[in-house]
Length: 125
Picture 1 (tube, helix red, strand yellow):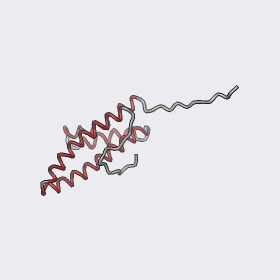
Picture 2: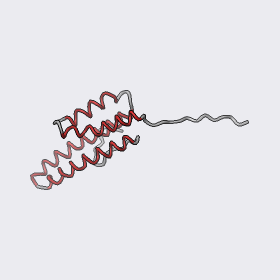
Picture 3: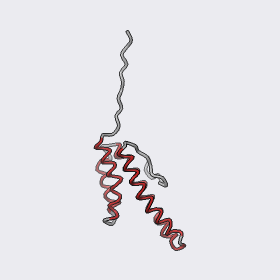
Picture 4: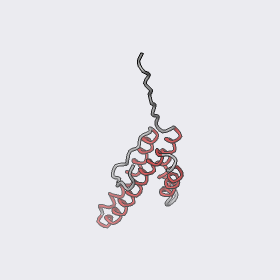
């Protein structure tokens, strides 16, 4: 008789965690309605759950890596706008911000943690 092997089932994040992470990514859009809300709302959401949920912590790091990177790219764009090319950089940054947040939200809902492109990694994910 062969010994019975135990199998370990590793489950991904719960649907509630995936929905919260998705909303964390989408909360960046609140900055379009209320100044600085696109920074504060994701920050509060991340800080509330980062110590208790590693999945939310990872997504919070992804979001804040992007927010800080976008601020840096935006400052560079403003400086370069005096040479006209910065205007195109700012337009591209706005388009990237929208696309990256939506794609990040979809991936979060699918249980995937991945950094946005063009992101400087301030926090290790």
